[in-house]
Length: 88
Image (cartoon, rainbow, N blue to C red):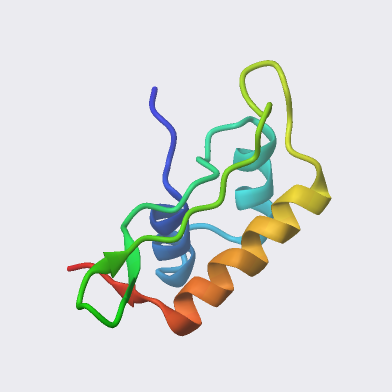
């Protein structure tokens, strides 16, 4: 069974299908992905697109993200929402 994306979980929450308790349970069972889909970009002076990314080195299989890393990623995503353009 595949993981739900963050967007899918947010959509289900907005529709009233999932509540916060159910979302936390899905996250604890690792059934919700941790990455957002879709590309955001900035336009440079010469009209080229620049795609910002966030990468944690040495974070892979067998390791888990701490709350500090999750909060950092969340703040990074908020900045992208505020300043970057979403690719259609």
